Image (cartoon, rainbow, N blue to C red; front, side, top):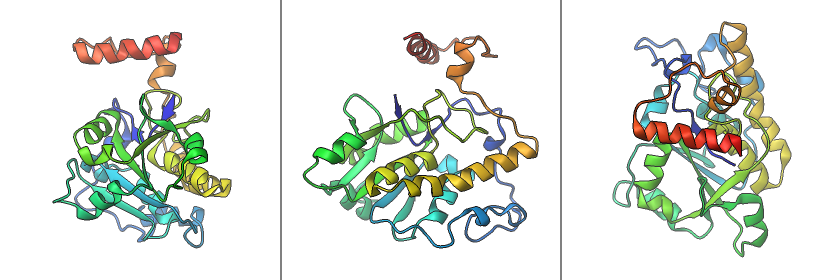
Length: 257
């Protein structure tokens, strides 16, 4: 299964859904964490040197999440190589820069599906080596809405990650064991494109520190919906909504396979 930079849908009972208070605590200017729990000691001393341009398309709801990963990702990369675009709808008129990026032959978008190529295999055969990758940041339903309702995002070559690693973002529930956070997807993708495993390790370091701190202060490890269903631990009744029930049945069938 492909990994995608989207967060879990059923996260309403978690700390990450809490909105940022109106009176915000003083934040670190680099990692965007409250100064008392700054994660800068776990960031690289200098931004990583990369040649790939990374565009994060962030759903507006993600901007107010307490435990978001995009600020940590951006803090590790040069400002001119990592750009965050916030919104639900994008067009050539609204964002000429993004429109130009999407039309370039060297641009990829990370989104799983039948049409998506394996990133590692694609770069071996591509006549033009990718220079830019786009990742959507949001829940699965938010990312799907952004991808399919913005024609710009179907212009770049669609790719996905085929990896056996499990998410280390253990304080936020994921639909399946193979789903990765936005930061983790970027870490894997950039390591592949840059042919440098050190990038992945460096980008994951602040994420591990974030999770460790939260677990030490009352947070709990969040098991994926797939794991809960597979082991008979899913605490909620099956949904009555037909669309949600269908999604649950598809997930259960994929587990049996």
